[in-house]
Length: 342
Image 1 (cartoon, rainbow, N blue to C red):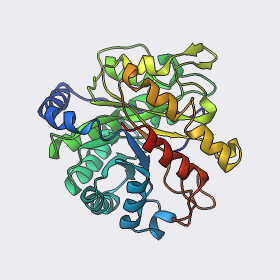
Image 2: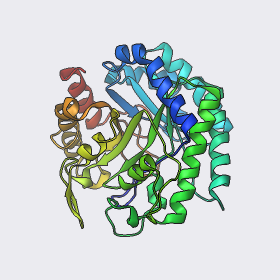
Image 3: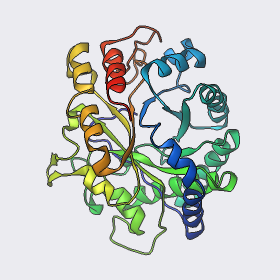
């Protein structure tokens, strides 16, 4: 999930019935949200369906580490029925220990039509919500990476491929419909996007497409998710070929709570200590905490708990890929959370 600066967001769509269901779910869970939003701010990403250290360390061991860190949210992927069932068991273990697991549903855009994409997304949504009733469901992950043209910022609709966008929209619409067919209460997280590729979410919210046409399916989601890494700079002043943009300010215009559900420091940034300092510094955790009230940032989730094994995405973890050796980032993260309760 940790992407290069050119990889992008994902988006989603829905029909009026689903939009209404989503809105109703938000209203019906208002009391619960009031009691939980103050306790879910700090979270982490895991890859319990991708092996490596996550197979070495049991869910109970992971839970103890997350508790030690002060983490309350734990984001993990699902991509088929088997992975959905596996994560459901882990979610039960974590919930008993005060950590909320939620799924990010992964799917490509390798489909011939939007209808085919919708049907596949629907099935994954059904499998995921049937396996466990989560409080949150994230519908796709950075699909903009597959829909954006090369070497553009992603702030304008025409910077995305129209046909690919339609397939991505089908995936998201299907996922939402599948979840809602089983669980009308779970909140929908618009699949995390990254860099400045927010035009996709804007099109989905408005029912428009890269080709400029209107009147397409409109989605109403509950939480806007975004990803931010060290090579992207300042999330309130991100600069590219189109100029500089306040990404958080743009996301805030959707009127939903914002989750920064992937943030991290590129492994090549420097030494472990330099990486740890950046992680908790004024362009990452310290900034997110300082801006939380202004931009309605409800939760932030570090990427990730463990380093990937050789050949993976890299050493992004708070612990090494043996599942037990703490890195400098672990201590820095733990101390920051303790010093900045949310």
